[in-house]
Image 1 (tube, one colour):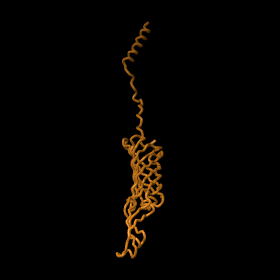
Image 2 (spheres, one colour; image 1 turned 135 degrees about the horizontal axis):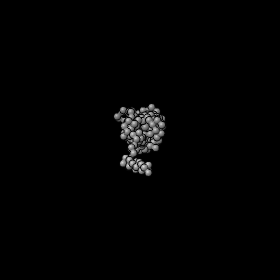
Image 3 (tube, one colour; image 1 turned 180 degrees about the horizontal axis):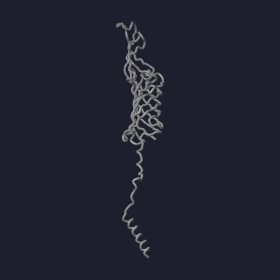
Image 4 (cartoon, helix red, strand yellow; image 1 turned 90 degrees about the vertical axis):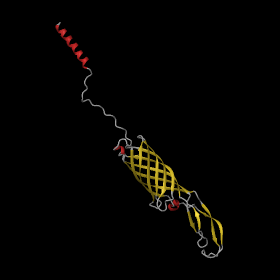
Length: 256
């Protein structure tokens, strides 16, 4: 009987200890899972599609009057090393050669010089390039700065269309007799047409479609890991000719 009473006291005492002891103590050695890392905004093995507006202007003594507006698209793949990639870019533009006056002599020593206004015709063109790119995502150093400057270099070609002008009609003084500097000779005025393609600096200087080199740089900002905007400036030199031009692009990009 005494043994039963002692056993009952032990059972009730153990239950009381458990009740008043509270929650079990958590070991200081328990591992807490870290929060997931933030998403990368510029990733390896990334494929991008961009759409942009473009403006081009000629440089140098013969290119200052050349201007072009248009738009295009580009397709970029970034390597497993996310700092380098390759790109194909194409743009369609309308190039104007500027206007202006020039003086010509239709028939040497038989007509006086005549001033003709030309060069204002437009030429449709396609600019195609393939580039190697290097970029530096700044959020590798500042996590909240989702900006990446990049540089590119490559080559491509410019495909020229037809000019939109075919001739100019002007008034010219036609010498009937005597040398051109003789003030006593008789003259008459008539309308003549200068036939042929309208003077266009790009068409006249390039002549045919050309291979071109392409170098430049830009900035891309990502609002999300997939959507961003970019702006870039490229220097194009067609076949190392004097018709070099600067091409500026600004647009949207989607990253897969």
